Amino acid sequence: MPRYKPCGGGITARARRNSPSCAKYAVSCAAQHLVLQIGRHRVACDLPASIGMSMRESLDQYLVAEAISAGATFNDGSAVRAIEQDGAVLRVATDGLVASARYVIGADGANGVTARLAGFPSAIERGTAIEAEIMVDDSARGKYDQSALLDFAAVAGGYAWIFGKSDHLSVGVYTIDAAARRDLRPALATFLSGNEDLCKGTVMLQRGHRVPLAGDRASRVLGNVLLAGDAAALADPLTGEGISYAVASGRRAAATVLAALAAGPNMLSSYDDYLRDDLTKDLKFAGIVAGIAYRFPRFGLQLTEDHPGMQSLVAAVISGTEDYRTLAGRLISRSPKLLRYIM
Image (cartoon, rainbow, N blue to C red; front, top):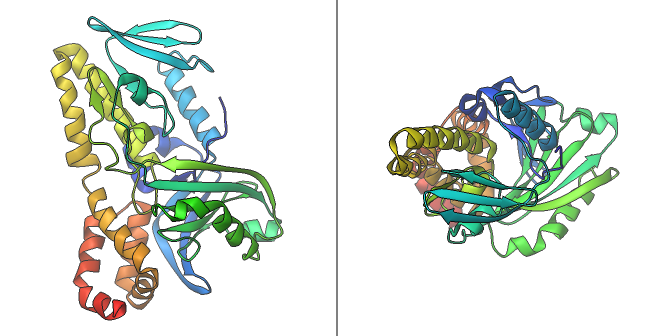
């Protein structure tokens, strides 16, 4: 640490509510406006709450420092090799030591090893993204100091994004479409070459990554091991945003372990209940919205443009101040218009 982590790095109002640490974090810049586009057709709307833009190496290093200041011991660069049950104790073997614990929380991301070593079934894979960090001139970068752009024509079953950072732009493509995943690199290349702000920029780094969506795991508790964050598959199906759900699950996982230490391992089942019935319940409606938005993106953009109330609702959902249930209900109420659009 710090190390590069491919991620849009957006810190929404939901993330700030879910984590006092995220609320205190000093972002490099903040999007006050959202631009939705399909080709040359654009709809711009104000966000009711800003989306802070961060580089994950900076955010993650800050969170590590917060943990250390609270009393955590941090063993950097020590890969986990095995997790074995030894009576009532778990043995976690790493490159440098063997740690004993009554409970383990695996918060090692989409490609982490905790779930596999602990014997969890493999997660379904749906979301995938590829991101590039791009140096552009000041005039191009300045356009995104306070704006975030989402383009729904760049890739099937997803979108391309442009997010401003302190000295460059983060640009990427995200999809939940299995066929489109094979063509993400060409899709990103096409998006970069077709955008006047990006085509003359310099790509400093480009990485792909999995986005484990809510619903991709049936359970996040097995024995005395809990999964949190991307390891638990909690990301938003529409946007792929995972920071707000990661910090919320991490805090609840810690509280659950404290309860289990006091009252026994039967307390662990409450963690799965919380993830299913509280934290990700609204994301079922996000899946409905994603199904409509990605299958009929032009309809969604036109509806957003024609109805100021819908525009405000979309901006509120993406910024994290409104829930998906309300948006899904509004879209379903427009079903006659949707049927006409399909026909």
